[in-house]
Length: 77
Ligand SMILES: [Cu+2]
Image (tube, rainbow, N blue to C red; front, top):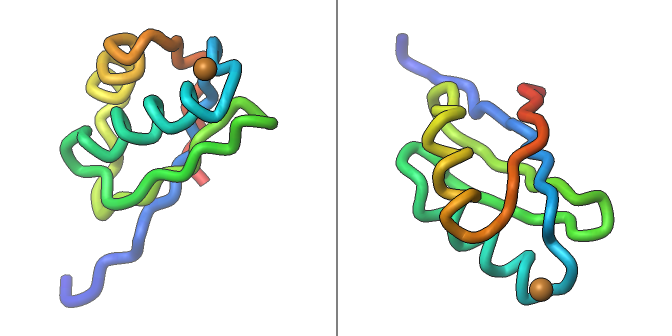
């Protein structure tokens, strides 16, 4: 396999109330193994992350939980 497509995943997050929360959630995602980029959309209570491989849902849930929020859904785009 010479070329791998970038995988985009939407992570729905409960508990974010302000831009500080969004920044904390974004940092937690960026520090999660395998995640190349993360962008939190506070208004829609979700984050869009990119990765080379399928993201590890348990690792993402644990990281968001540790940051004080809750993952409500993970949608592979
Ligand atoms: Cu906040």
